[in-house]
Length: 478
Ligand code: MN
Picture 1 (cartoon, rainbow, N blue to C red):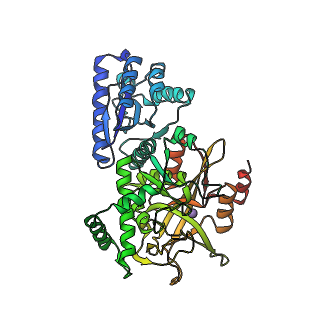
Picture 2 (picture 1 turned 90 degrees about the vertical axis):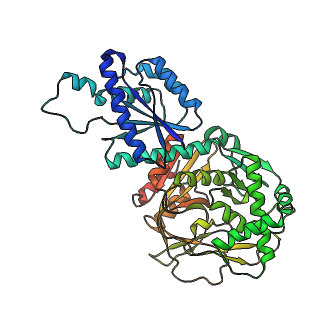
Picture 3 (picture 1 turned 180 degrees about the horizontal axis):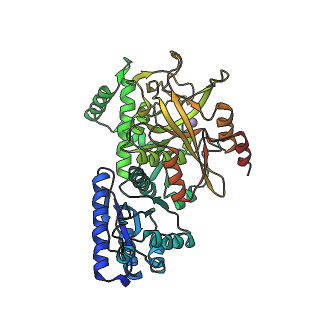
């Protein structure tokens, strides 16, 4: 289980009794957080910062612990912030400044000078907030009594985002083939991706997968077919074609295991040695949290893995999608989003069917794929683009809807959604902002999650939703 370190601040001016009380109050707070956040994160109490030296030791411990994904700090008393400078200079993990108190209510009848000296977050947290601003350290501030539900919800969000950032720093994308010829938005600066987000983008030939697929044993293939039979409806007699996809999934899994890879890209223009484009195999893998970007899109591959981690444990579906086509009936505009094949099984509203159909592009054999209608509900559509001198995240609020009519001749999985505030403004804003045609759609995540990720990683964010106006569109002209 991943951890957050809880580092309280004080100073040695107040005497032993006060510091004992600080530690006791912090322990109570940490116990409460552990009880409430069980299953999401473990919170570990660190020695109270009374001196610069302790702060440095605490932050060294944070950086040395691979299970620690971030830090919560809180100034129980005043804690002169010069004491925090050297420690904070060592910190390169997400930081939450919890602006709270041990006590909810002010004890009007009994409050004296001792109480006021002991419980002065209003004073100490401002001093601490100043040094974070002065040092320009990305962080979150969560204000309120720590037992209140809205405060706890924000701490939980921080834990989930911190876990996603931890995964981001450990993401290795295997790219099979390069970017699709001539496509712009899937390209960019891989080096900068690694510097900023930790994504290692490494090239391999797709022949590696073909080789592993050929080497699968019948027993391995049977086990994978049994997995499919448990999850999906077999709507084809052509089991050999399905078995080829089963071999691909096994091959990708083995490759991931052997190479520490958590995300893939492929390219239908480079399938040397493969009989089919991996369809079913990728749809199934994505539903297991493996990142994927088609056409060499390493950014969306890594970003989808990060966002699936962020959504882990929540209700709802999260995964890669491509914008495809519209129903432009006036006032009731809808988008149909899908892909050639690779729509994650996590978006299925019904039990997916395994079907085999021809694929017009790529010149390979008819591939097996999962076909299903998509989930419904409020969601977001998020993408990340490389603008040359910086990255930009675009996050649009959407409403996923049931498709108005069956589409019996469409042989791929699909989702449908309504743009906000409406089609005209929502999609124009996406275009102005330079939003890609590859994105991550989620009914589990919200704009607030993405905004926190953007703040903590220092990424530009453009949001689109009910609060977006015609006038806002002009802001996108840079
Ligand atoms: Mn595509």
